[in-house]
Structures are given as structure tokens and as C-alpha cells.
Length: 176
Image (tube, rainbow, N blue to C red):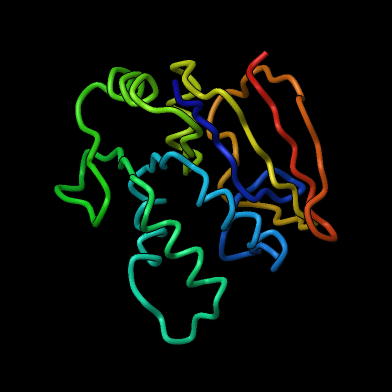
């Protein structure tokens, strides 16, 4: 059975914003390895549209961007959306009963499946389907934006913490 993992970069004051801050080269290499090892990713519509950037080739990319794009393209993706009618390569649209679809997905796979996007994570948290939360805490204060936890905060238990690069701490939690 697969494990659903929600992980994102987070400011010290609890916000996610890929335009305000991003991963260091060390953290980006970490994300490349994670993408290579994941059994797939579940996306909400907005996060999927952001990540579709990696479907196209960009001549300015270096070796690491190309490696991430290759890993991202290779993994299966499931996109939860009521408005999209189609999705890109190696992706399937999740329609209908979200809980049943995700339970079936977890039961039919092994390994880790990434959950991408705080709103989708909120829905899956309410259904009790997220197995692990990974917070990549950056020394940045935004003061506003989209919170990591988009709804009521789940009770969590800290499992591990480790430093990645010079200034990012990864905090791993499971539901309490």
C-alpha cells in the first residue's frame, strides 16, 4: 500500500509561495532524488498547472533542471479537478468520489505518492488520507500568502528533523 506524503517549502510564518522563495541548489538536488523515487504525484488543478512547466523543454536549463524534468515526466500523475477536461502526458484526471479514488490509488500502489498543493492536502487531511507531512522550513518571512495548512490544523506528531543545505530544515510529521 502506498503512503501519501504532503510536502512543500514553507516560510517561517507558515506560507507557501514558489515565486517568493525557492530551493537552494542542494535542496533542488534533494527534490530531484525524491521525484525519481516517488510512485507518483496527486495534484490539485492549480498546482498541476504550475508544474506543467516541466513538460516543456527550455533551452536555458542546466543539467539539474533537465534531471528534474525527466524525473517529473516519468512519474504517473493524478489530477483532481472539476474544471479540467483533459491533462497532459502521463497524467490521469481524478473525477467523482475523491475519497474512493484516492483509497483505490493507495491500495493499488507501493511507495510514496506526493500530494501537491495545500488545498488538495486540506481535503485529503479531512478524509484522513495523508500519511505524512514534510515541511521544508526556509528562513523567510512573507507576512501573507497561501498557508501550508489551508484549513483546520491536524494533530501531528514529529517523527524526524534534518537540515538540508545551509538553511533549510525538513520537519517530518505523521497524524497523531
